[in-house]
Length: 156
Image (cartoon, rainbow, N blue to C red):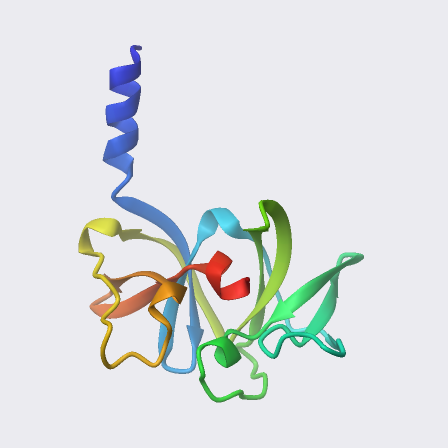
């Protein structure tokens, strides 16, 4: 197979993106499934003195101590207590060009699904309470808008 065919096949797949759909309050977010390592029930977190407000603690996941991020704080949303649907999504992101595991709180994990980049919309500059640089794009899922966050920017 020549490289032109390989490239065109790859381009055909560029419209679809595998994601893990999570909920924070009434908002829905799509995390790139390629970054998700596991989804676990809430576990005790240990506060870290002097840590950034949105990564206030660490958790022990299978013997590894990893930072625990609360996206609600980063997005200026009210912090809520855990519910029966709450989960921790362990993702791998690149920080300073190094792979780092981070636990991210979620009020609910919906499913692993596919979204289309062809429906992607730019983040509006007006009316959003989130910083536009935290959002890769906004798209539709089941007739609802979902946010595809830029986790590297959010966590740096």
